[in-house]
Image 1 (tube, rainbow, N blue to C red):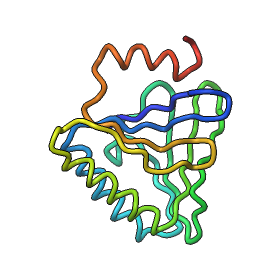
Image 2 (spheres, rainbow, N blue to C red):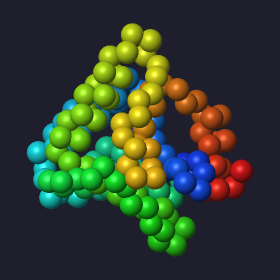
Image 3 (cartoon, rainbow, N blue to C red):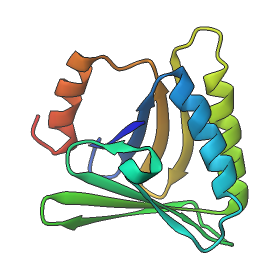
Length: 143
């Protein structure tokens, strides 16, 4: 599953997971399993089935009292996003992603959480290659 970080405005950004229907169902299962991993920080990289795009690296940090926040830092030209979430937040996100994966149209998106100034979003079958190219420029602030 691919993800991208979009700089939408000065006050609101989006960590967007872009996937097909199968990947969406797998993401729902993955989030459900992560809910029991309190205190574990998971790197969303190829070892865990993710494909970050355009110099972004994300982490999922399951905390007992996860505040539903995301921290965003820069390391050189790489954007690092950490999504802090509670075990219950993982379950709720998994349910939302699961509902999306069973959508009759096979197309749609779901906002999982507003984590501080970052929206966490899943987009299923909405993005084509041409859209990727346009939005990758936006992701790094080069419109």
